[in-house]
Structures are given as structure tokens and as C-alpha cells.
Length: 387
Image (cartoon, rainbow, N blue to C red):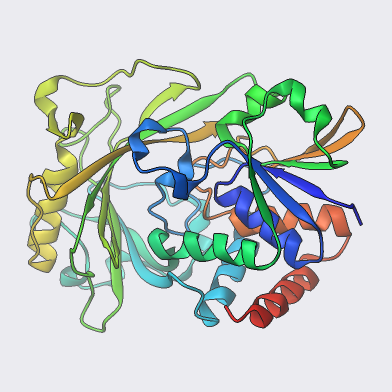
């Protein structure tokens, strides 16, 4: 066993990976230039993705040839954590609704209690009016209430003996780190610290709104409802004319509402957006007006709730690191200056979703144990911690 393992990055992937190894008996240290708890003005750090999760455990906007394996491992572990009442973990009845026929993504086969919405009554489905045909599906998914889950995850890491050191690393610092094993969870910092083999470094910018003190949205059996809703392209689309969706995820601290999907490349400062007339502005941040207008139609028509343009909404702008649509997630290893470096970044919109799956994958590489054996050991250690 290595004397010490250094994990670079204190986002959800870094914390989860370090915690996994710490609970398995390794001595770990996270080295990072910033942590989520340090930051009061999120919009100054749009590329620090762990400031902005919604966070549903659904493999949206991520590319990997290992996706099914990683997702199923992660999903199973989240459900086990929920059974142990880990802070912030609940289940949602999640709808993905379209005003046109859409291809069903492969991940639908991995979700629990999946059903096409044609099997439901009209009153059960989120919709903005009662007169257009709707397509899509509904399933159960784990939801991590970020204001509760991530602080508890970080606290468990520290409680388990893990340490977090503040240091801004440069590429020349890697060879000087006091560990023979380094795990790179630095997200968009990855290509700056290490040579990245991908020709593409794609990112996706998105706008979110937080409506505080909003009620949980539930159906008549008390299940919490969340949704992604995609209208016709003439109602809401990107600059290329592709249909865009809006969404609502209820949390105990209010609603998280979106969204937008503005494609770009890492380091890009300018964004190709539509005219100012298609935007609202709060706190000097412009965002697509459909985030409010369409969500208000859906919430009012389906649940009798309202969403209005007001200063009670807090806007944020974050970036998802897609990396590549060929194989975006980087989960490999290499030797640099005699050190073994494991890479774990490029999660796109699924950093939370894949966090346990990728952590377990790295643990398997280090221990040569099976995933099921590692999950059992981790659950035992978490139970001992009292979480």
C-alpha cells in the first residue's frame, strides 16, 4: 500500500475519490487551490463545476465507453447511502418530456421504475398547456440536495482522517509532490497540469436560477417531482436552431431551475448567444427568458405554482467540462517522473452522477479487488462512522 496518495482537486470527484481510498485504509491528502466552502461569489468561478450541481443522478451530457458500468456502480452506491440516511439523498420521480418524438437514450434502461409517459394519465405529466401531444418517459432517480450532501461528504472525509491542503499547482510542481501515486481530479485544470491526448476541449455553459423557500413539488402519492421539458424549437432553441429544454429540481432550500446549453471550448471568453430581447437580467447576469417563462407555464398549468421574474431569484452561470464527444471522460493512468498518475476528469454534466463509480474504478486499479467487495467494505466503514 502506498505511504500516501495525493488527490488533486476538491470538487465532488476529488472528495469522493479521496474519501473512498481513505475509508479503504489509505493515507490521502487533497491538494487544491480552492474549495467549495471558500467561495461566496460562485459566478467568479464558472469552471468550478462542483459549485453548481442540480444534482440528479442521471448520466446527462457525458461521453464514455464505460458509461453503463460506471453509472450502475455509482447508482447502486447512492441507493445504499440513501438507505443509511446519508444527508441530502432523496429520490425523485423524474420526467423527461418532449413536444415532439425523440430518441430514447440508452440510460433509460438503467433507471428504476421506467415508464413511457403514454402509459400515464395526462394530469400526471408536467406540461405547459393541455393541447399539444407529449412524448417522453418517467423514472425514479436519486437526487443529491447539494447544500446538504456535499458538506456531509466533505465532513466525512475529514472525520476519516483525510486532509485538504491549499496550494495552487503548476505543471512543474507535479514531480515534487510527496507521493508516488497521484490522482488527478482537477477538472478543467487537468489540461494545464498534464498533457491531454484529446484534440477537443469542449465545454458547455449553462444558466441556473435558484428560487429560495419554494415548496417541494409532489404528486398525489407524496413523491417529489422533477422534470426536463423540451418544447418545439420555435419556442426555445440554441443559436443553431436545436431545441433546448428547461428544467426544475426541487430541493429543501428551494428550486433549481434551468437551463441553457451554450457550446464552447476551454478558455473561451466569448459566447454566441441570441439577441438581448430573448433575455432577462438579474444582478447584471443575462439569461434566456424561457427559463422563467416556460417553467412558469409548466408549474402553473400542472401544479398550480408560479415562477415570476423578480429579485427573489438568484442567477448563476456554470460550465460543464465535456472534453470530447468521442470519449470525454478521462479515466486512465500514466507514469510521469516516476509517479503513477490516475486521471479522473471530463465528466460533463455527470460529475455527481459518476462520482462513486469513477472512485470505485480507481480503487479497483489500486487494490485489484472487485467492485462488489469494495462497495461492501466502504459501506461497512461508513456505517462505523455513524453516517
